[in-house]
Length: 304
Ligand SMILES: [Zn+2]
Image (cartoon, rainbow, N blue to C red; front, side, top):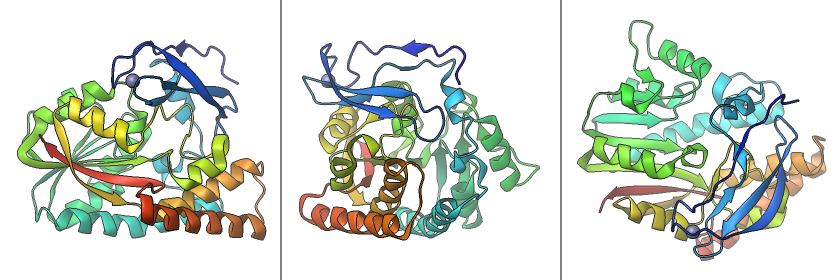
């Protein structure tokens, strides 16, 4: 399927600079290429990553899938409809999470996809900016925000120095080739009392353990990094950030379980599959209620 897949090998752990890695799992790219990718862990700090991974020149090929719905906003099947339904509910929930801590100000949504969250915040009086590498998604986002305005850029360098009150990375940090560089750049843009909201999947959750290589939160090779609480905390601390709050994303347990069941059952949908996914999501949330290992979390972080 891929003519020339150039793979890039990570040699130094971005969290602790360790150089010795062990293989943990081999996962398949279920949404697009059907190719296999290894997940490795750093033996010093236990950080997990996809290694080797497609290099910067060819990674965009793996987002070419019409299935990558967060870029197109179009629905094709029941899973897509569920995704979009959940997304609408989630928009309001995210807005409230922000409103609780900041009434109004400048917001950057980094990796904003087709811009629904930006448009939602824009309507509520926020001064919004976006960053999105996919040209298709970026154009959609700019259209959504009004044809006469161009608020969504391709790179951070295209943005002038702004003192941002809130920066959001909704399931984005795991896709970024160099998280250290990104966090350094964002630190310069963030106001002294600004907050960054970082949503990431958690491979230490029950649903991740249960589904193993089928777990949709691995999403190889688009997810380069697989965070746990301790490795994310260490990465953030290295970059001069501290975690202020950690918020569970309970709906993700259900959605991710549903996708994982789909991968495990080779795309077959059935009532049983639906029930299994629901039960797994439910157990995951129940267990996480005790150990705080939810399927995904939002970390709210500030300058150290
Ligand atoms: Zn390490």
